[in-house]
Length: 93
Ligand SMILES: [Ca+2]
Image (cartoon, rainbow, N blue to C red; front, side):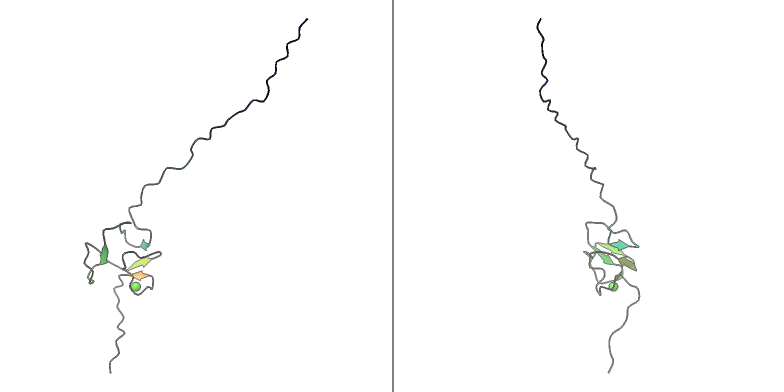
């Protein structure tokens, strides 16, 4: 009588991990640095309405700046862009 022994050996299981990367979210249509106005995230250039900027886009302030200020709207760096109030710092005398 023969006894057949079945040797399965080591079964290698290769697990293929599916790519689960989340799809690149569509670009937000508003720049995340500017709160209070919807500015384009990557141009064209935006300037304050009534200011000395050359556009081509203009925005009315005040706008809160919470990040980098690529459009240079917050020239004095106080976190408010296109302030309507302008303090005069000129001294007379
Ligand atoms: Ca400012």
